[in-house]
Length: 89
Image 1 (cartoon, rainbow, N blue to C red):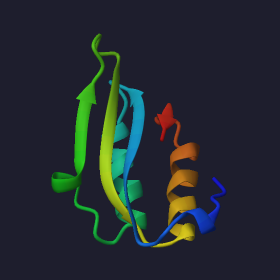
Image 2: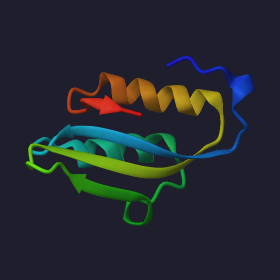
Image 3: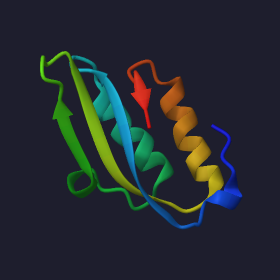
């Protein structure tokens, strides 16, 4: 993901939304990605899980603080390469 840094102000607080199949190890993988790239990420306090109405999918909302453009790009790159992630916003 290439971002236009002049439109961002860092540090930048944001909600990162990720969706995948309910029976996949998405939560574990997402936590690993975020802990790798965010030194202060705490899943217990900053990650919410919501199943879809039929239970086939699950979405996660993570409250994160991005420190710079490289961090944003690294996280989205890792999410895009993860086979368990069906969509990230």
